[in-house]
Length: 354
Image (cartoon, rainbow, N blue to C red; front, side):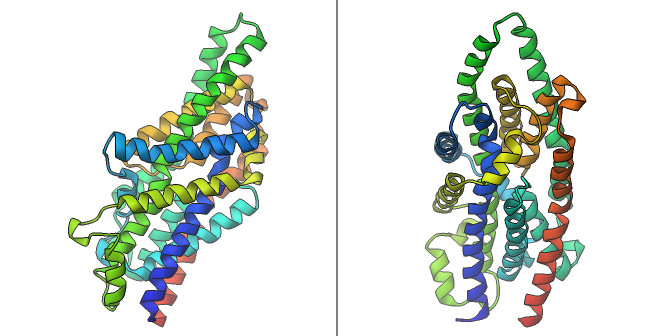
């Protein structure tokens, strides 16, 4: 077994592990508010989230018959001719290390931006900046700022609107109504997460599969094996079997869940009530679903964090726990640079060894 074959196998395995870690970390984003408001128990919420995450595949492929636009974007951050199994492996290892560290410490970071940082670093350190495609990179970087702001403003607006509509209604009656509505907002948010997050690793694995047929030195046996799942004559695409596999693995990650992250997002930023939970989730769901169809890989973490802060601000600046918010923002700032450096150095090492 040559080094290239080992790199391909390791890349696929780590990509699937990364998908699992994605589910674990982002489980908090999907279900933290509905747990905080005691609408569901953690077990009920995790099962509910897993079901609706997988429903995103049914909606995109079987109902709407569309491609995974976000997956296509993830495969387009660098020239296809520089994508090799070594580059993909480096990007995945760098991203997985950072996601694992942050999940371990209860920090709800963006798994997608960790992966994007890994791709950029692995391509840049070996091939130079000329191979990078700046339009999707700059658009993604812009939405690091825009997605939490959109979530914040939408959450704040919805909370203010509902408070005005129900200002004369009994508190218990309003809470009862929004506890029911939270089932729908959580489901919508999970569909949004499933339509934006799962395609990210699909795109990386698909571009790895495509590179098997263009990278010199890949064995005929490996090309034949990958050819069972990926038809290179069709050009770049995400096979349905790959999509289903990623959705199942991500759902398993959610089933296991990230308890520390759930604790941070479920009450570490602001006090959550049923009306606030619905507003934050609906704001996040709207942002995620819209950006998914535009092919923009945004962070579900950033989006829901903005929504939670937005609903908290309806009680004034002091109602938001800014110490926790600062810790989260610090992890966001580091999420692209840290994997970028780790992955870039790894790809340099792989190329030297090769």
